[in-house]
Structures are given as C-alpha cells and as structure tokens.
Image (cartoon, rainbow over all chains, first blue to last red; front, side, top):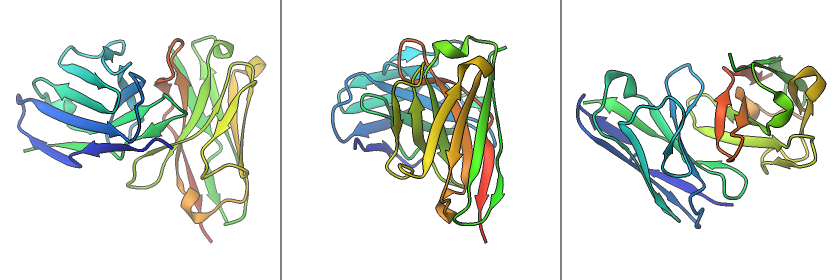
Length: 106
Length: 119
C-alpha cells in the first residue's frame, strides 16, 4: 500500500501570503497525484491532477509540482476563501489520501 | 448541471446492514468509473471502493473488503454500496465520486450521506 504523508499538519498564513504544502509518497507514484480542497461541511473539490494540471475553473494562484515521491501544492497569494483543508491523493495504484494540511488564518 | 446525490445513510446497530445509493445526473453515467470515499468525524478521507464503467473491474480497500459490496445500474444512473457487518469505526460521511474521464482523479463529488453505527 502506498502511504501518503503531508506536511505540515497545520499551516498558519496571512491573507496575501504564499502557502506551500508538501506531500510525500512511500513509493513512486509517477505523476499520478491529485490535490483536493475541503471546507467545513462540504465535499472535497478537485484542484490539481496529474501533479500539475489545474482542474476546470481552478484559479491560477493554485499550482502543483513534483513527480515520483515528492509533491508540492503552492497557493501564490492566499485569499479568504482558500482557508481550508488540503489533501493529496495518489491514483497510481488504487487510491490513497494523505492525512491533510489545514491552512488557517495567521 | 453535473450532480451526484447520495442517500440511504442513517443510524444502524453494530453488525447491521445499510445500502447507500448515489444518483447521477447531468452527464452520461455509463461513461464514467465511480468510487465511494468516506470521512470519519474529524478525520481525513479514506477511499473505499471503485467500479468500472460496466462493472468489469471492482476494487476495495482492505478495511471494507468482504463486508461492503459496490454495484451500479447504468440504466438507472445509480451507484450503490451495500454495507454489511457494520462496526462502530464505519461511522462516517460517505461520498460517491466520479473518476475523471482520462485520469483516475475524482472530479465530481456528491455532498455525502452520514452513517452512524452505534448501539
């Protein structure tokens, strides 16, 4: 089973600042990596697939990078609506989610 | 509008059974692979099960293998999850989610249905 580890668990950021979230896979997943955003009481929302491709309607301030075992989600300038929990997910071999990173207001 | 709507959640005693449904609309359901994902209270997301277009390929997470059964009815645009031998740790919000047409990420999600397993 591929284990996905996200860091940090919580990220405190001021509005307008950059946020960098990390995701590490226990084995290579190639580029088969997605990022999701989840707000309280809502379903997850796909942000990034293929490690770096933004999903339909996702603002350009969200970007993904990496391949193999190391991945990064960057939010270039945090807006108020971006404070949420972010999950990475590998789909190289079945599906596994990371434990999530909560982005909170500093 | 592309939409997935789950139903069938509720309260059940340990050892009991429940059948969840997911109604799809706004897209050609038979063209898409589908999944069930759950989220225990205050916890992260856990993938549970996958079913391919014509039900030819089915996979389960180890945590539910042998207890849960995924199925679909393309004529009714519906996805199902039969849950047997339920345990307290199965308490969660259950989401159905569509796989992207060309990738295996999950591009459309329902709002979820809540299952509570308790005596």
